[in-house]
Amino acid sequence: VQLQASGGGLVQAGGSLRLSCLAPRSITSVFNMYTIGWYRQAPGKERELVATITSARTPNYANSVKGRFTISRDNSQKKVWLRMSSLEPEDTAVYYCNTDPPGRWGQGTLVTVSS
Image (cartoon, rainbow, N blue to C red):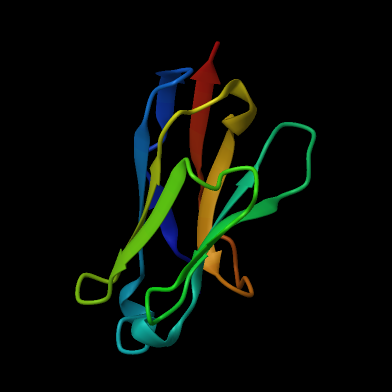
C-alpha cells in the first residue's frame, strides 16, 4: 500500500500548514480498517512517527508535536489530514503518510520551517 502525501511547503516559524494523505483505489474498500500514521524524516535523522489515527478516529501523538498537530480522517473520502500549527524549525522534514505499522513508502512532502 502506497499512500500519497501532499501539502508541504515553506512556512515561517509560528505558522501553520495542513498536509493531506490520499489512499489509492486499490485499498479503498478496506481503508476504514487501517490505522494511518504521519511520519517524518528530518535531514540526517531517522524517520519517526508523529501521529496516528485509528479506524475509530482515535488520535495519538508524539510528545514533540502534542498540542500543536491535529490528525483527522474522513473514511468516505479515503483521506487523512495533519494540521500543523505553531510550527518550529525543528519540524522541518519530509512528511509521509502510511499505515501503522508501515507498508511500502510513498512519496513524501517536504515541510520547511524558517526561523
